[in-house]
Image 1 (spheres, chains in turn orange, cyan):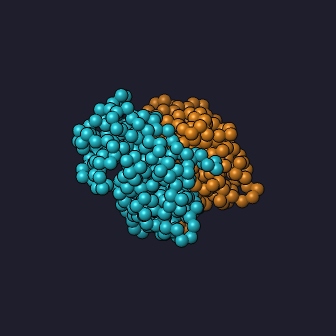
Image 2 (cartoon, chains in turn green, brown; image 1 turned 120 degrees about the vertical axis):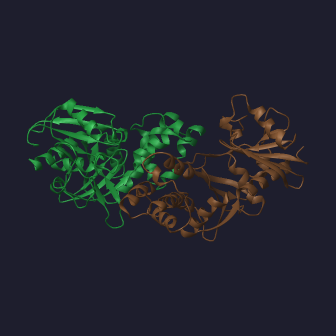
Length: 294
Length: 294
């Protein structure tokens, strides 16, 4: 049923995006709104999914993200690493509506690790399918919850989550640093100062400079947000680079503004990286899964 | 005027505590409420201070903490390190009310540092006056904003703030970890697991275990809060121990529950520490300052 037109849905906690995909993988229409799973009332998923079809057509739907979590429509239990695209395509979960399939999340319980992802697996496997991410390499999917992923033979071998984006949002929303973090972080000297400071290995200790620096006139207030962003992203990237091998090119998959900051950070800290648009990677992953079904 | 009875006030952002102190330093009455400086309306400080005198007596008042900040009653500008008790006593700031003095805060602009404290200087110099903190040693004042302080010849020589308490509160209040951090952190195996994990040097990366661990059954939900506390306090203490010298005993000054967790962490990470009650240290510091005035 996924041989002709179908609908790809990226259904997260607070937002969803949906795309009508044609036979050759081209997108002929799209929508996005703030109907994330947390805003769907109990029993409301059939109607919420029907609204997508009203908008984009009565077509088969393939969904990924938090829609498959315990708080979502139907739980699609986590699959273990290592996991490649064909294995993922074999384990799609049917939702109780005609031609609605949900992509399961992935868990990593190897060597003392305990980690989960939902949605990033589609983007990453899509980037590999596109030939943009190394099937035997290191990838990074910055966002609210960044994921560092080691792939082997085209499969997700292991991964680790860093809550960098969420932490920045929390610090920005409330507390003693919040009034100093109002500016949008941007690349520049202040950002790089933060990245270099992250090398010190004590990001939680160095965060207070965001407050005391402007107070004492040694950090311009308008630079504080970029400094903090550099410090947190720098710390995030340093942890990711621990498994970096010389010569590797890290695949940075996500929204261009954010992958740009991560790319600059990787370079500053001695690695090399390529940026891949997260939406393209998502569509490539979903299209590859749909092909397995047809 | 501070030779007889007087009132010591610890006036912070969200709370204040006040003590009537007798000629020999004994406390004969006390009060505490949530009238921190952030809840005092513009122009409301004379009335807010009068309310303390109505309760404890028409006596001279000596105040420390955020009451001397730009948002407080009168700004008592930061004094530079090194700073000892006699120097601090020489720079008390008069508030515009009879016999009302405010203790200035301290700043550290040495060697690339930029840091400030308000209130902790009284506790620390008090602990030294009590003979409980080393005049040439390392002290730690855990709280919302922990301070690591190096003292030399009884003076505050340098210090660094770590926002451990605030960060824990932010993570607990909102976001993907919040529902897993409801339990009060306590000393035990989960706390020590967090402390040991902090040695890895990537606390921001390791925080997500708080979410994924219970989800995957490898960390009991009731242990998640203690693990997170151990991870954050462990990271805090590791940064403090960077300037630790073998044989030193760190003075941990604060509320007993919190200094207990820090003491256990210091021991686990190879240092030695003594716990000193923050209220006793505050009263000793204020009494020593009052003696300089009389």
